[in-house]
Amino acid sequence: MNIGEAARRSGVSAKMIRYYESVGLIPPPGRTEAGYRRYGAAELDILRFLNQTRSLGFTVEQMRALLDLWRDRHRASAEVKRLALAQIAALEARAAQLQAMSRTLRDLAEDCHGDENPECPILDGLAGTTEVRK
Amino acid sequence: MNIGEAARRSGVSAKMIRYYESVGLIPPPGRTEAGYRRYGAAELDILRFLNQTRSLGFTVEQMRALLDLWRDRHRASAEVKRLALAQIAALEARAAQLQAMSRTLRDLAEDCHGDENPECPILDGLAGTTEVRK
DNA sequence: ATGGACCTTCCCACAATGGGAAGGTCAAGG
DNA sequence: CCTTGACCTTCCCATTGTGGGAAGGTCCAT
Image (tube, rainbow over all chains, first blue to last red; front, top):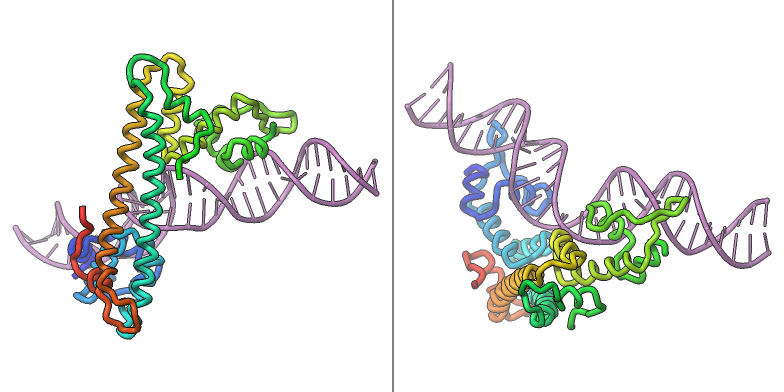
């Protein structure tokens, strides 16, 4: 199949497929005489795998590592688990950070009347030295 | 004071101060004869304000809006509160999304022995059509 | 043969930030 | 007075992952 169909069936845009190829994440596929990229079932599996990992917030470099592990039939599952656990920790840390920001902002917003009155503790708080709660 | 001291005292790097100036977030400051930027207490307040909003995840455009509101003595606090609540919602949504990713990955990792055995449900799961739980 | 849906490569853009080069300035100490 | 080192200036480049779009070639159905 051509790149368009591969994109539709894998959930990875044609642009990104070419990008993944350009950064060496996936090997250059076969080409037709006219130069069109050809993809088969094996390539589609890889693209779907990449779509999954991307949707789980892995970076391209992490995707590369996971892909290597996926292709290596003899790798230890410990390594895969290590990557997964590290990613879980990273995701949780970022989520916690966002929530800390949210909490700080919520505290500021709580005391703001939100009416026609210009008096607003949100701006006062932002002007001060308030730190995001850890 | 020069840009270096303003950076140190506001928490905004000199690079970013120049950047904020270049995108019109802050007005061009006065200059010495030699062309050095000069900052006073008022500018420092603004930089600290920007440092706060940035640490709360506001984008430059949102910072611009908040700054305008801050400078406008007669604005209604409702507008400020609206921006704050929208940002809270965005932060919470992003955090929830990250946690959904984390949950999916945790579920996958749970069944992985993490030993020398190559058998690994994480990779199997990533290859499948598992969706991130909403 | 023509038109529309594909495909190709190449360049540009984003947001926010840092790195670094090449060169000017300032203040302190010899 | 001159050197030295810490500043400052502007300018360009890179990052991450993604999309937009131009210019041009291809394929297929009518």
